[in-house]
Length: 140
Image (cartoon, rainbow, N blue to C red; front, side):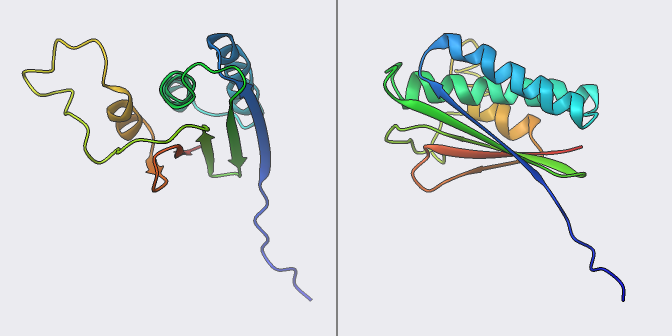
């Protein structure tokens, strides 16, 4: 009798206190996953950029740098893709009504590009309804 084709995935979880120093632990996890699954360099660079941006936003804007609040990072990895989920304990935000960072009157602004970056570098970017969780998909 033939065995069914079963897709298996591996899960990783990281809980970080809401302080800037936590980013190094995130970077270690990204490197570990990328090495284990032979992630191409361009995908690795996009993951590192997106996850740094998403977790920094969760720490600063979501949890307001409150070290008693955590940011939870989950990664689900299979042979074809990595799905990263970043969740903070903040109130969330309205990700549908953000100013366009490429608009002529905003092009000189130093902030406000995070969601734009996520949407352009990840293969898929999905926010939950309240905006305190983002799911980032990367094909590998």
